[in-house]
Length: 158
Image (tube, rainbow, N blue to C red; front, side, top):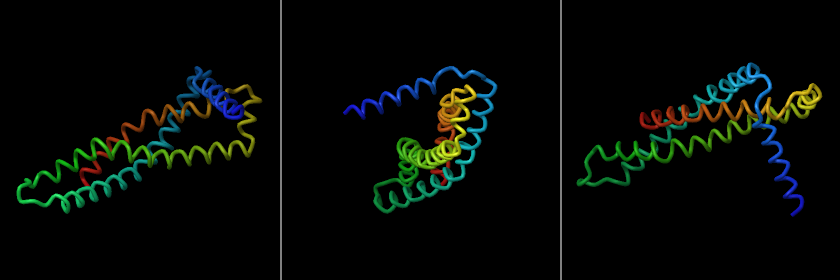
């Protein structure tokens, strides 16, 4: 129990250091733009590809399961659009992005820890949590709505 409380306390201390005001806004903005490109723009391809196929599979499944002479032909397109808008684009894309971006961030920070780059930042007096984590969080918060919008359109086209 004590170990769990200690871990939670260390986490909150890290988040306090992360969300403090950046010392140099110019450096933060530069890092923010790099993270937008690395985490957001580089994810557009996988988002479009997966959304296209999810939309195609939803359309096929609905067409096969709702075959009735009483149903109008536009029902399949309408239901596919509603499913992509309400459910799949936001939830599935965020899960896929969490896996892709999360592994990318973990490998980058792990490599920096092993090569002692994070320790060097601390020695230089830089708030390493704020310098490394805050631009990544800010970039993903601002780029995920755009990626979900791309996902909606690709899913409907699929």
